[in-house]
Amino acid sequence: MTIANTVEASKITLSELMLPSHSNFSGKIHGGYLLKLMDQIAFACASKYSGCYCVTASVDTVDFLNPVDVGELVTLKASVNYVGKTSMVVGIRVTSEHIQTGVKKHCNSSYFTMVAKDENGQNVEVPKLILSNLEEVRRFYDAIRRINQKKNLKDQEEKFDHTSESALHNLKNYNVIVKINN
Image (cartoon, rainbow, N blue to C red; front, side, top):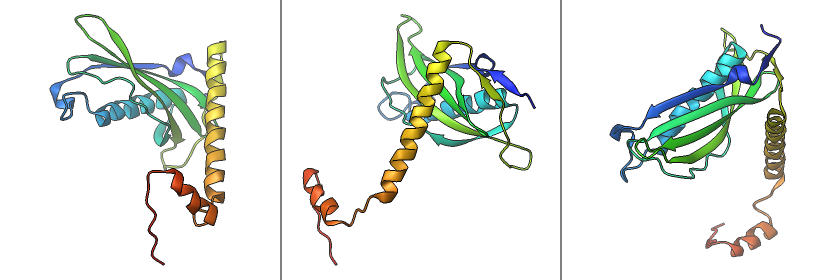
């Protein structure tokens, strides 16, 4: 196994022309199709970096910023931003380009956590990540921040008592009607 690898060694670019078969009922490219492409590039990026088969463990927020039209060229760029012991965070940026005009749009960005597996399906250690510039350092720290935020949120969710009087009273601040039959 490789002891360490660079961010550059993980980089993958995928471009695909969007066809009518990829569209939804409103004539835009279906978000699920874009998610499929994102999962494919995350797999390729993590596998290239680690030299192992990789599986998707989680996907951070995917905000669809701009719609993609049929006939546009979608380009996905991915790189490993963070490594743990057996996991990697792959950052993905999706852009679309109108082929005739050259106008480009940022469609979304997301972070996929991928886990390296051996031939028996067991988790396997991944190479250390060599950070070669300050942008790579920023992305690594951003990943640490997101990981810590997820841990803190999970801790808060586990401690929160939705049955408490204050929690039920607080619902008056939302667009709900509470009718609990005991």
